[in-house]
Length: 492
Image 1 (spheres, rainbow, N blue to C red):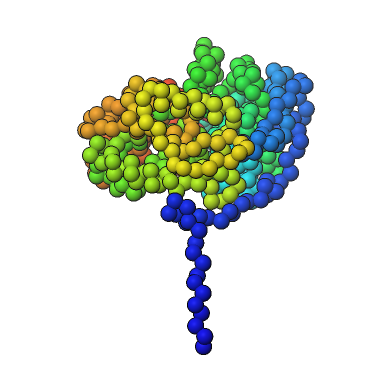
Image 2 (tube, rainbow, N blue to C red; image 1 turned 60 degrees about the vertical axis):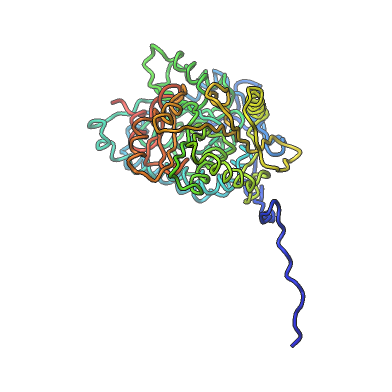
């Protein structure tokens, strides 16, 4: 037999790493995107009372996806009236009957998860791998979880026969459009409230697709209403006199304005605002595991995460080792098409957010911090930013104090656990923190000392519908998720 002397083809390498062939998800999987959308009020899609329209674009291409209505005060009035009318029958349903609708919605979300994941990536810019494997499973899980609570409210710890509040006005952000919708709508419906929701003006499409799911599930008309628009629409909703409960997730300045707006009223308010989380690595931490947690903490969803681990606190004795390993790992991150299943970091959500990130990173350099990014080629169209870390950062630097909301990591050092706590707590925010160490006693001590609503131990950005989430100080108040998430929608 003749011997085959042909050499096997060498795999393509880049920076010493294997290159991945493109693995695109088809944008057609998102289904039909209409050229224009109105509001969803009383179970029907209706035109706005005004003529102003906004546009939502694909952040990866800057192509216009659709136009949607700018909600007016009259539109909000109609939506609140529809929710108020539906409240009487919806709140009177036995919890077991409300649960059936929530279970049905959860199952439909699972059945349409590919469609919703692709639509979310197109409208938001986040990688399909994240929408497919993180966002959509959590969205369905929240509806399943609160469906389970709907007929057990007497045992939730809020007294016997707790009552719903009425109409909930909910305003959600653009970083996790569908997940934030689930965090708010699922407990509101489970407890017998009706909803008027305003999605973010840069990411309205999955909320409008969810409206279709409500109709598919046979949800009674007016139980869920969706009014699109910018901050003017949100202000009209949160200030509406017939709204009983306001839930807002977004920036601290807007949250502060809503709190002032509602002061002196009888409306119940919960706020989930900004963060500047410390991710703390001790000298006995498993370095490789910690580096994965650091990357997940700041580069997941392009850093568009309120609880992102944007401040890395490293014990001095392992600083060089951690930074060397972190830079090697950052070299392997793939930036590009959000619909490519190999992409790690997608597009920045909007031109305005890109400008904010660019401004703060320029300030970091101007103030003397040392900037580093891996070599990577960014696409020509769209909104993009390289994963970036800063060393030589002091607590006085803007990049250590202000929420950047992008893929930018500030590195500080500490010597003792007490110093780590002092630096971690030296922020007006108090949403989350991470601790990396092999000592269980140290984890418990740190968790008690850190002024953060969530403290992760040897992991980061782990979420579950059974676990409450929320912050302290300028990160807001109230909790979403878990049994605790029911309280915000009950008269207790």
